[in-house]
Amino acid sequence: MDTVLEIKNLGMSYDTTEGSVSAVDNVSFRIMNGEAMGLVGESGCGKTSLGMCIMKLLPENAKITNGEIIFDGEDIVPKTEDEMRMIRWKGVSMIFQAAMNALNPVYKVGDQIIEAIVAHENIKKEEAREKVRELYKLVGLSPERMENYPHEYSGGMRQRAIIAMALACDPKFIIADEPTTALDVIVQDEIIDEIKNIQKKLNMIMMYISHDISVIAETCDKIGVMYAGNFIEYADTFALFDNPLHPYTKALMSSFPSIEGPKKELKPVPGEPPNLLNPPRGCRFYPRCSYAEEICRNERPEFIESESGHFLACHRVI
Amino acid sequence: MGKYIIGRIIQIIITFFIVMSIIFLLFRIIPSDPSSFLLTPSMTAEAKETIRKQFGLDEPIAVQYFIYLKNFVHGNFGTSFYSGRPVMSIIMERMLNSILLITTAVIIAYIIGVSIGKAIAWKRGSKTEKFFVILGLWFYTTFTPWLGIMFLWIFSFKLKLFPLGGMITPEKWILDPSLMEKICDMGYHLILPLVTYVLLWFGGYMLLMRNSMLETLKEDYIVTARAKGLKEKVIKNKHAARNAMLPIVTAFAISVSFSIGGAVLIETIFSWPGIGRTIVEATLRQDYPLVQGAFAVITLVVLLANFVADIAYAYLDPRISY
Image (cartoon, rainbow over all chains, first blue to last red; front, top):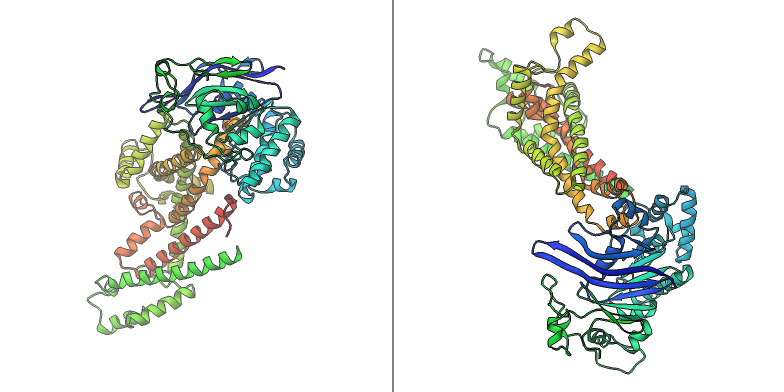
């Protein structure tokens, strides 16, 4: 299998009035052809920032400080805005959260999707319209709905339209940023199935960002766990669930209920994530870790392959 | 929609009558007799009484009020105490003059202000932005008569580029010039007050548009537009500006309606025979019918413009329906 996306030692920081916040630090991983990768972590751990780095859609006060993002054989970090414009949506597209104002309220939804197609492909508006009609069917929306405005859609429909929009230019890679977070569980389930089916059917690679590890387990082949801007564990979904190695991953798993297993009391992860203005010198999880030792305080653990295909950043491989 | 329009029209009628009643009361509160302007000490008591009767000033206030309302309903605004001409014809003539100067200026100020506001919001933090914000604020807060007089002093008195005031050069018009010459002469008189007004007002629109645009640029759909790989110009004009314009349209409708009522200060300084100046003169002369008529027309225009803005809003923003 070919590597489609490879990220090497990526670092990104926000300049704030109080100093520089390193939201993504020393992140490395790769996604192979046809794979879906899940990115899980608490709020503010840098999941979305990482996604935005790959699109290079960063706010003005943010910058990529080091590392490479090799997409389709090319490093996109040094690329200019104009070059990025060609990659966006055609190479990498994004499924936004419908609860956000991701659709412009004053234009018809269909037209907003057509706009994306016309911006990238050399085709007529009518052909684009036909394509959107097909996409609507693919995501389970009636094509007549193209003529409606975003506020005339329900939350679930809006999310489907956003998925259709993400597929508009046949992208190689899709980043799904919490696409089901604001939906009720039934709609959530439908949307997850939809995304999973489309991803397999169109053979795209996907990065699925969520704070909900159970959703990720359902959709993804591999899981990356992020904590305070670091990748701490990255493995095959089954390997990770069968044998979580990092103390944070373990803690995260016991904080979610399991439907099939025996009833257990949920254990929240104690403490709070560190302030990234001044992160701990050693392991960033050290202050909350029940296995912490002296070395964890002083030395940053390397992100290394501990078993075949199972990457980990922990001094104590437990 | 139909129900909303009917409701709004009833609301406009009620508001109009309240305003008319306030105007009526205002002029009766002023502690002097309007007839004193028409009467001279040499008149006989009989002649005085005839004149008072002629204008209806001998009736009790309540009766005057009902006559006043009745006449308005019939579209009868009476005759000017001062000139003896029908109020309506004076107002129409002056209003056209005001529209020529003030409405034109408002539209130009709006176009300039909105375009600059849009551009500087996009280039937030740049030197250009700072320059225009300071410039706009400076003109916006400048005392109108001061700027007007400075311009007259520099451009008309010192440099002799423009006339000192008025709307036409009467000496030329007596010779019955061609239409083209008439237009040129008016344009020549128009430029200085027009430029003054535009400079004083573009800053307001500019800052309003800049703020609205900055708010819009924070919206998620702007990120979507960028993620879709659209061109900067498309993101700025189609996605950001279209939404940022929504609140500015209302401001525009209201400004245009007020501009039809003229601008007292500008028209006075540049001796422009518009409706703003007419109101000042008529008030000083206690010319009740003329002031009442002018206020009535301005009130009606403002109410209708707000109504039009509300309806336009529903067309511009698909989320709004009545």
